[in-house]
Image: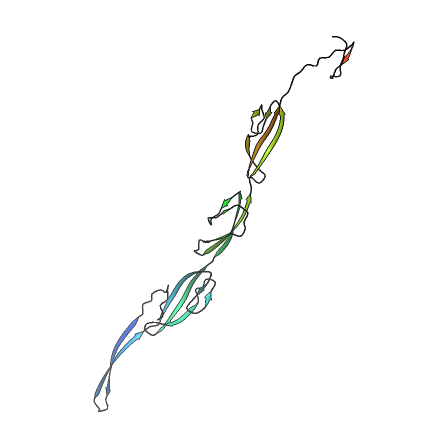
Length: 219
C-alpha cells in the first residue's frame, strides 16, 4: 500500500474462521478436513490536504479549487481494495498595491529608501491563508522647497515670522508648507533704508512758491 500524507488511519478488520468437514479418502476411510479461513476487508479513508492555488493528487490530476469528492482505488496491506477520498482545501495567493505619498524620501517594507516616485517595486509576503501575497509599491515623492523673500523697507519691517526688523537682514528663516504638503524654507533678504530730515534754506523777494505748492508772502 502506498503511504499517503494526510491519510486518516483505518483499522483493517480481519476475521479468522475454523470449520471441519468429514469426507472419505481414496482408501475409503474417514478424511477430516479443517478449514483455516482468514477474511480481510477492503478499507476506505480520507486524504486531508490544504494547498495554495493548485494541488496535484495521487490520481494524477491537478486541482485548482477545493474538492471533497475525488476518489482513487488503491490496494491495502491486506491486498484488498482501499478507496481513498480527497478532502482538499485550496487557498489562494493574493496581489495588492500599496499607495504612498511622501516628502523627499520614503523607506518601504522592502527596506529600500526611495528618493523618486516608483510604481514597479514589489515585495513577496505571506497572506492570512499562508499563501504568497505580492505587493506592488505605488509611490509619489513630492519635494520640499526653499526660497528667498526679497524686501526693501524704510526704517522697520515686520516679516511673516512675526518679528520686526530695524536693520537689513539676510539670515532670518521661516518654515512653511508648500502646495505639495512638504516643507518650504523661506529666507528673508531684507534691505532697510532710513528716513531723513533736512532744512531747505531759501531767500526770495516778496513771494516764494515752495515745493509744497504754497506761495509764501511773509517771512
